[in-house]
Length: 166
Image (tube, rainbow, N blue to C red; front, side, top):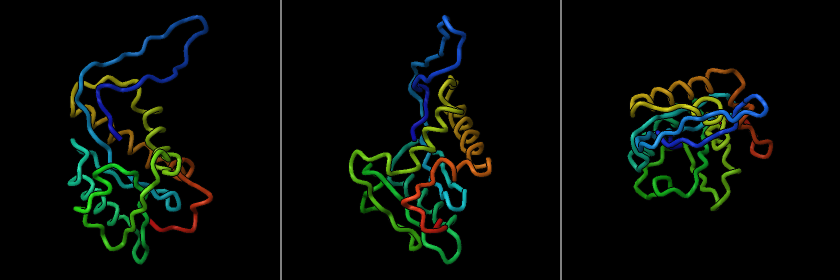
């Protein structure tokens, strides 16, 4: 997920008949949150990096691999982004990547986590710079993962639930 100084607008509560203001930033600094969740275990693993590339994806796969329960095997659902599908990635032995078909973000439950984070913690902020973006991302991710049952409620898919594999 890209988070930066050009965030989208969201619905906000306001008194009927009023037109509330939302701040909008025109600068271009941003950071990328590489994240994965396991709804069965209600946990997540994430890295916040300055660029979305193969090197970042490799670090992310290694972090996910460290979070997989001993003796278990993790499945990582990925879209067709170049840094997800490059042959340069060294996939850890306890992970299996599954590439989504094009234009099917609803199949990736991580998209719901990104939507929740944006809507509840990131959308109405104006960031002073890169460090503020990273700090906000860390805070948002920690709020999502610290709330017991939050990941499970956002990311569980009945059709994909075969037990704890992360």
